[in-house]
Image 1 (tube, rainbow, N blue to C red):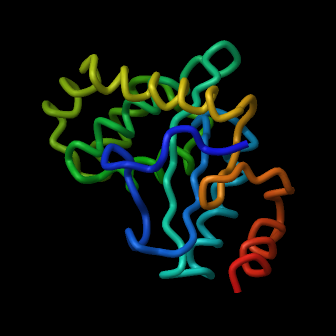
Image 2 (cartoon, one colour):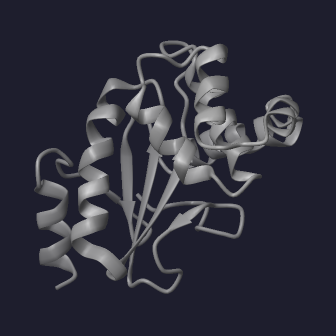
Length: 173
């Protein structure tokens, strides 16, 4: 299945814009499997380097992970202060503590302007962006997290251990 919503200017990119390999992850900040995939993706980014751009899209499974949507909005709010990836990392590194007070602590720890962050957490457009990611994932056939797309095509192999790295290296030598 293909990625129905192409990467665009509303997405936060990690890596060079023109990189030949595009990895999109639909993830949930409270999902234990996404927490397990987080260091794997970080390692992949280090090993593939300038050949890869990474996009994370929010797919909060709110019925089973009630704090995932708020965490996603917190990452988006941090992005308004140019600290999206810092907040993304600190949320995954502290995945077991995602209540509102913890998110405020994380925001302060990465140097966000707290009055702005608190106000931005209430912004309807950020909540709509998170919901939009979720619906774009559903249209692309996402039903579980994490789900990866490589250059617009759904990756159906294992992402665990170095399987994803091996696949990328063999497909894009």
